[in-house]
Length: 495
Image (cartoon, rainbow, N blue to C red; front, side):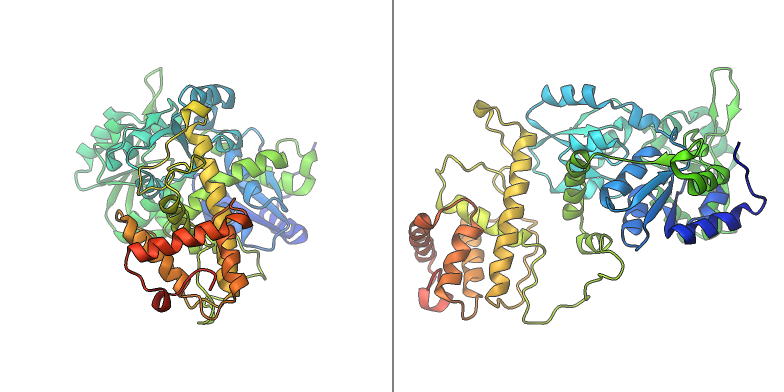
């Protein structure tokens, strides 16, 4: 039998220092765990913060899928959970084998999954979203692109409403957010007419219809902090009230209960989150895998890599991409905030690669190897006759653009291009504008040697061999001529 010390907090802090560990606590944890943690927040923010530290070990006080995200983003660190039984009803509602079959029956859909799912579901997805960035990411996808959204049906329905989409929804839900009593909510509103109802979008639509503010856990916290004093009826797990009281000490906070099968009115807390306690935190830090409750979270490298890909895609599509990427830099390896003026500024070559990819479609419109994968020309269209699903097409596009962007950025940097930043295009571009952008990119290369410029052709365009350079350059020059660009003035490929 393990002994629990009387100076429990002191021992936890001692073990943290001894093991060079970082303690993470989700907003829904008990207040005493939040108070001893190094970081308190939403699941993704916690994992990114942990990845940015030089800690060797992560103690994740949350539920299993959250610890998995930490392991996905910090594979070199050990990740521990105080109680290995801390699962999630939403995760349990989406089993990988059943969901995989569901996706196979809808091959013309890409898969967008809420981060509150297992690593196996992430591995089956094209993009991961959070309740914070879901709208921003969905809005970037082509309007005619069919989408499967999993696992939370209520969040998916809310996103459909605010984006005008008609995503195919998986029938999953969170037990905490789904079981709030509408009757009890109406009573609270009647008794506190000045209170603002704030709700997480995992709640059913009937409950969201009462809300003054709908948002992620962090968004709800910010709303309370921004409205000092006041009264709030809170429709999310009660653990968040601890942080709300710290941000707004004079606020009056009311948590909405639920009514069980026996008709009893009960506090609506997550039973999985509450499995973690200070005692279990101490035990897993002291005894590791020998702990009676907790243990290490392990993922196969194959699964980790597959699950990481849609997570990275989410960060690429987020507006705060640069800030997100900085979160992954290990302590001691931070990059400078500003680059020298003579260094090209290309965000991982993504936009440059995209423009050259569009030019490739322009110059070779009949190339049967090309798929219409750009947003401006209609989105992801699967080649059904070849058995290519929308998910596979999306993955192929991602890999091609990543490769083109990386190689193109390398060539452009090596030739001294001056401060070129490609902004994401919000409006539809016609062929002339696309050609003009690509030509101006070539013209911006200062003093490039013939070999370097030629090298940019096959590298920037993917699978074109050296023997095909001449044909491409010739067609490129014809495009320039068609749109009225002067070779001497605007520069050229391979000169």
